[in-house]
Image 1 (cartoon, helix red, strand yellow):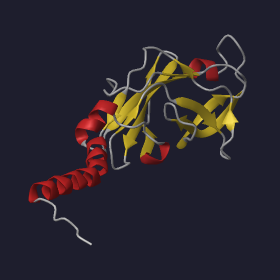
Image 2 (image 1 turned 135 degrees about the horizontal axis):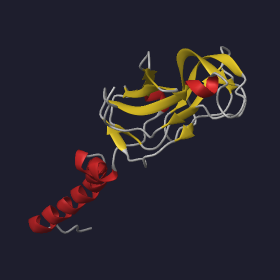
Image 3 (image 1 turned 30 degrees about the vertical axis):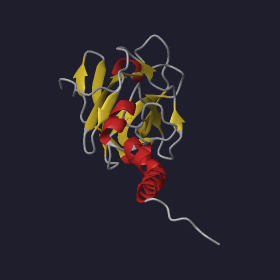
Image 4 (image 1 turned 180 degrees about the vertical axis):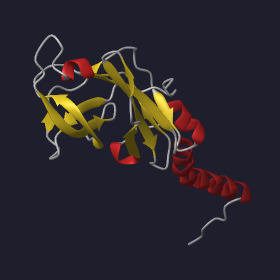
Length: 186
């Protein structure tokens, strides 16, 4: 049986096609994970497990309110994005919710991309007038052991320990602004 020898030009072309076919998936994967491709898609949403949630204490007092700065520090090892209002509720020592969750205050939310080690901020307003039962409706105050904080868009939370008076009724005594890149002025 005679097997014709392939011409060198044909052999080179066939080899080039085979190599290109083999490398196409690798090139596509590299392009999808390159920094340029990641920038187009944006950093993924921050996972609660990669964030440290903490707060400045003592807060800054004004007439009838105390303002605290909630801080979200990214320790995930990669950039991630927060977008929206955090969820905040007071909790008992056993971790059960006390009263109503914080109401959301303006301004409108904007995405904040955090590099690893960077921190974003959300301003929390606590009404000392309402918790002292001086507000328009009874508060039925009790001592809370801390705040349960849900990063924007997340169903898992972190507990920030801080003893404070909390309304056990459905009265709103907490308000929170969306996460922002810049630290509040205090």
